[in-house]
Amino acid sequence: MADLAVGDIVKNITDDVKLLVQDQIELAKAELTPAAKQGGAGLGLFGAAGYFALSATILLYFAAAWGLVAAGLPEWLAFLIVGAALLLISGTLAGIGYLIVRKIKGPDRTIAQANQSVAEVKAAAERAVAAANAPQIEGQVVPPRELT
Image (cartoon, rainbow, N blue to C red; front, side):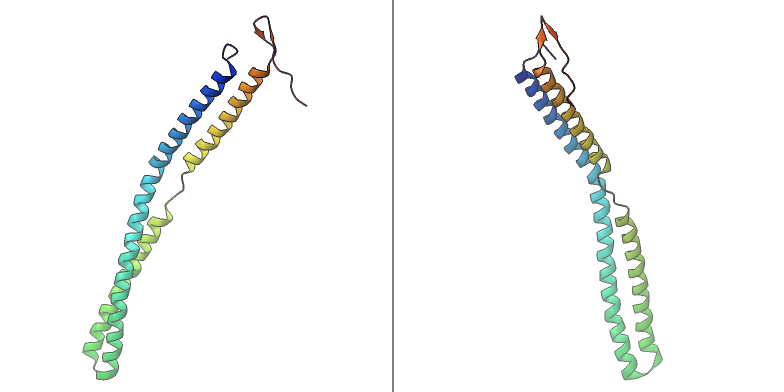
């Protein structure tokens, strides 16, 4: 490292940082793509649950109206049974959608890798600055003194 000029050291660090950032972006893409797909499936099930809930509500309104008007058991009871079945389907789909969405996790590996990369870049920059500031005695680098 002592053979390199400060400009070369800074250029090497800059190139390394660029590579690290590109790797972090690729890791984030790889980690977030499955989570996005799961989220889409869960949201689709929530949408289906909403559709069935709306259908059930309409049928329950009809059942209540026909029950009050006709007071005869067969017609409104049929609407009521269908409405209750649709609400049951809606609840099941909503529960499954919730379970799928709840499993989605953040990009933990990407965050950990980014933190590690930042620490490594800081350490490399400190070493480069120390090497650039170190006095040289006949071709040898004298280690810098510790700052207190």
